[in-house]
Length: 471
Image 1 (cartoon, rainbow, N blue to C red):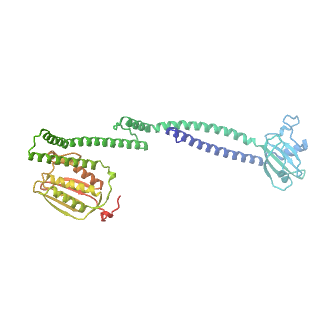
Image 2 (image 1 turned 90 degrees about the vertical axis):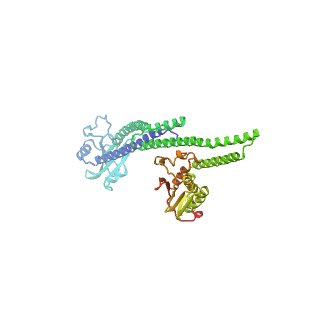
Image 3 (image 1 turned 180 degrees about the vertical axis):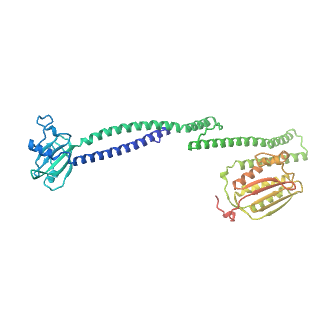
């Protein structure tokens, strides 16, 4: 069954289910009819008017005691008394029987003689004649010439089996027609119901063949198939968006890598040409070239590190309970080295969060570097941590309102900052790390000028970082 197509399985299961239901209904109908006919036959045999006593007396008086029933074509057969297919005979206590009515001999059994001898009130049983015919016999006490006797009345079981056989064939025909109809209906239902699945399969095959993620499945209704189509459309949309972002990231990374690589190549070519021609570069120019090479290599290494950080899947992050205040204090030490002429004040209240320590430190360093980069010489940066809310306030030129929605985009750089070192990935790494820890990040214009970055991370149970279980 598992090897069959889904459409064939649905059709087969529908036909089998209907066949079982029809078979059960037909069997129940046949059994109920059989019981009804059997009970009706037994009731008819118990009726006293089946063979009236005057018929018994007249027959015995006219015909005498005959041991067997006359044949149907016998000229002396008293057909005037035979109005049904009921046979009757008188049974004496010694087992002798006298024919009364009918064309069939009724075998006498011990039950019949027991009734004739007044050892039983009556008897109802089934016997088989010498010709193989089955009879249903009812024996009741009687009195013949003031002597104890019994009267046996019998009817053939064919009165029950014949209509039952006819009913069985009728039910079988009806069941067959029902199964065929169910199979046809099941096939139609399977084709109609699975048409959206066929459309989905065709769309998947088309995407696998052409890598076209713009294919959409028409969705109609709110059933499970419609939900499947909606989920598929959402998945292809997400994949298309992810591929576009990936292509944009590659294009932006190539563009950003081109600048330091071009500068490196130019500087190295100047140094190489100086060595090849024997014309020495002035000492100051040589030191400037080497410093430029070193700066470009540093920028290139930072860009590659940022790209590696962004390429890591979110699932690769190992979150544990870490002290945000300690990580911020370490990041402040690095920020003071990068801005020695700046005044950086800090007010850090203890706060524990669930995050990846190295990624969180890198994010806070990026946030502080952004403030250092845009702060004027001799400026001031204010850092405050209270209740999980970390704010970094600088007194630089600030960010125009129309540029604020783009500050966390990858490789986006403000027109005024494109001459400054950086790759445009720092704030996007901050946003990614904060979101991984379930927090929020926002940049807003500060009152009195400058920019204020607000980072919020939900708290975690205060426990030593090295003892915190990983999740």
